[in-house]
Every structure is written in structure tokens, then in C-alpha cells.
Amino acid sequence: MNSYFYLSIAIISEVIATTLLPATLGFTRILPTLGCAIGYACAFYFLSLATTTIPTAVAYTIWCGAGIVLIALIGAIKGNMPNLDTIFGMILIVIGVSLINMNAKPVC
Image (cartoon, rainbow, N blue to C red):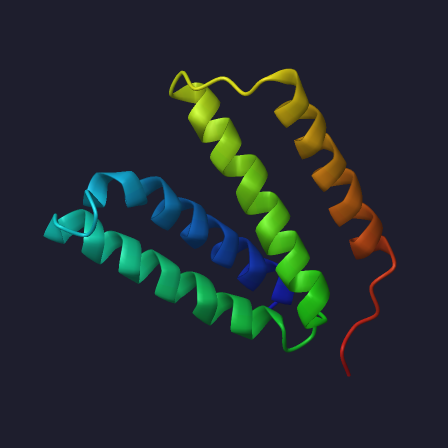
């Protein structure tokens, strides 16, 4: 399968787990805690599959950058609007991830 597909699953899993994190109430609620743990486990598993052909630094950069932007968008949908500095920072993250991805060489 395509490594970028695996990377996408890793990103989605990480975003789901991070979104569930506040619902765990410090890991005192079992179902959100299980969902969070499973989400992070899936994220790292699929990230490891993605790094078979995508250089680790590139895959991790994409994973982190996309996760940050998606979590911020979810926060905005929930009413936690980011300020202009945060929006500018996320634009810089997207530009940085794009530049890194354009110059990445596949792992042999």
C-alpha cells in the first residue's frame, strides 16, 4: 500500500486520540482513555509503516504539522478560535511541511 495512505491514517488516528484527551479527565474515565490509547497506538503503528518508504524526518514533520493544524481547526469548530498569531504560525507550518515534502527523497 501507499506510504502516504498509511501516513494519513496515522494523522487521523492521532487527531482522534488528541481530541479524546480532555474527555479522559486525567485518565480517570475508562472509555475515553481506551479510545485515546488505541488512537495513539494506531497512529504510531501506521507512522512506522509510512516510514518504510518516506524518510522518518519527513513523515514525522508531515504527521506533526498536519496534526497541529487539524487540532486547531477542530478547536475552532468547537468555538475556540485561534488568534491571528496562531493562524500565521499554522500557515508557516503548512509552508514548512510543503517545502520539506517537495525536497524529500524516498527511502530505498
